Every structure is written in structure tokens, then in C-alpha cells.
Length: 85
Image (tube, rainbow, N blue to C red; front, side, top):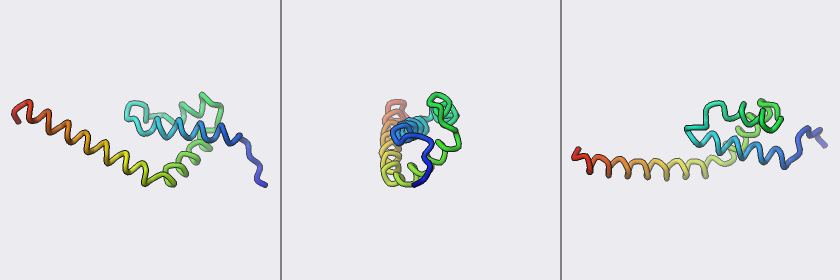
């Protein structure tokens, strides 16, 4: 059995918080360093967990991104139409 420094619950919580923060452009910058400090986790450990989670969850994240792009494109068309462009 591997020596596990952090409990599984803490790993999951830290990873979830970091992944969510990295998806939001306003909180993306420094998200891993900020969350690792808040939760008392080494930032390189959290960076590895996030990398693994993002790799494993890539199709879901891609769908979220594609949906967001469609929404923003629709909003852009509506703004252009209302501005007469």
C-alpha cells in the first residue's frame, strides 16, 4: 500500500475546487497556489491531482466549453443585431 499523505476526501475537495476555479476566467490565475494554501496542501501535489482530473474529465469539460462558446456566439449575434452591425 502506498504512503498517502492526504486523506482522499481532502484530495477530492481540493481537486474539485481547483478545477472549478480554473474554469472561471476571473479566478483562474493563481487558483492552484491559492487553494493549496487555503487547504494546507502542497501546491505541486494539487497541480498533479488537477492535471489527472482534467485529463480524465476532458470530454465533459469539452462539452461545457462548447456549450459556453455557443452561448457566447448567440449573445454576440444578438448584440450585433441590436447595435445594427
